[in-house]
Image (cartoon, rainbow, N blue to C red; front, top):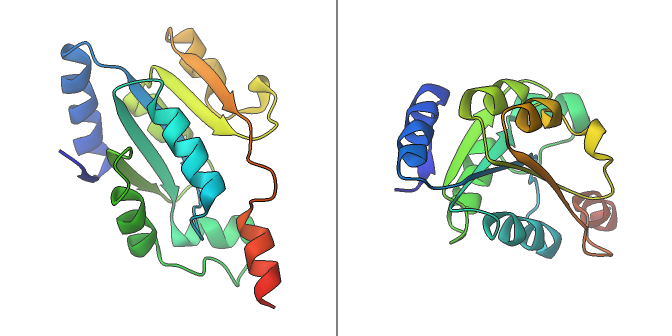
Length: 154
């Protein structure tokens, strides 16, 4: 079953998934304008496990992170687009600046971020590793960023 879930429903689904010996992968972001770089990271993330959960910054948290002119696309529409991808199983929208609360609730087997992060700088990495999970960093595809797309519109 695919869908946008509230945290309590997602937490319950993750417990059930784990009972079936399936691996849960978690990644997060704003996903304001979905582009090939996002597709690359999401597909690679899904290949690490059975279920891909995407933490989606709410409109409020995107504004706090990116400024008053963002997001360009509403959280409901961004969620709908993400769920249309065959490799995204669940979307959880969070209002905080980071997805730490979500990570602690669902206890993913893999925590995935795209880019040039240092593992120790990834929110939730310590928790995931202490819980027996792994942290994976997927290299960005060169030339793709939502900010570049938006800057080119102006």
